[in-house]
Image 1 (tube, rainbow, N blue to C red):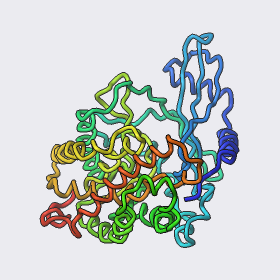
Image 2 (image 1 turned 180 degrees about the vertical axis):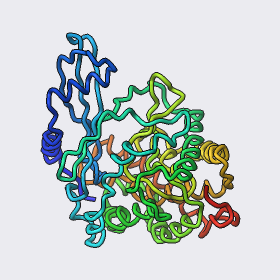
Image 3 (image 1 turned 90 degrees about the vertical axis):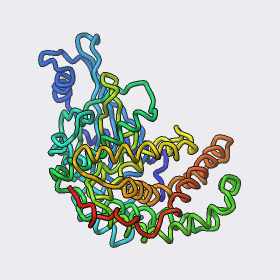
Image 4 (image 1 turned 120 degrees about the vertical axis):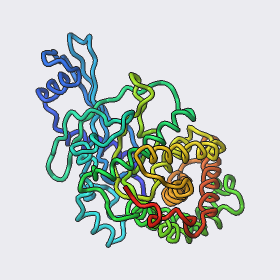
Length: 404
């Protein structure tokens, strides 16, 4: 996938900051809401950009508003996410014509704003919440600013107990969202559509052509990092993806968060046994267990968890999620949950774990180590995918288990 250069990124940030059109009176009122002090005297404020990967086509920018009140004695802050139509995405022309037309005619770009204005909060189980929503501001020209609580995160990391709690809550969440049909109308409601969109929108358009290119694998960074069979196995897995998608569609279908990585399940400092779910950018129906994929791989993909720990972690997530389903009255075999995890994970992550967008950079020891780390992650994901049977085990499909 083509990337946005640093110079263009700086120009985008400046343009995005201007789109917010924040006025002094509005920000002072916001500060009083954040502080829960209607009479607070907000002294000063500023807007700073928050760095992020430019991969999400509907994310137009991230910002933090910082201010103070009481002669500078009381600090406050709020988080701003700018969402926009696909037509504002700098890389929209990269998409094939049919997919580009579908995107341009879709209202799905409003999905995250719709989540925060809708009924999702009512469906969340105890221990999982949304950030406080201060304002959803329609900016015009198919742009929306979502102003949210700036969650103060706990300093503690993710251990197996925390992963287990998150998996259990995600299982409960999936049943509750589905049973109450709580996701907004802009959610994807065709079985398998969430996972299938990653295939048509990412694998076919960008990842697979790059992985099929001889020059990619001849590059010194990959020639050094990849094992001799990795290229052949990656391409064989790509050939099997349509079969995996068909198998996933046979599993019970539940409404999912869509990107439930640890980075999007914030651990609040004032309640470290709970989670705040953010970044609701692509949700709807997916196979049971789908949300576990990004929960498993998120920290590894951010180079914060060794690949060697993933198999053991997977053994924590699957039974915890299955137990969460059962708490809400949905009995599903662990085999079905495991297939949903593995199948969705390999479609979404196995072909994008290698940071191919960085092949044009000067080779450094740090970059070489990154490619070695990601090659190990790719090998794990590819092996996971190649081990998947052509269809889920008997007794794990939607016809035998039913949906809530």
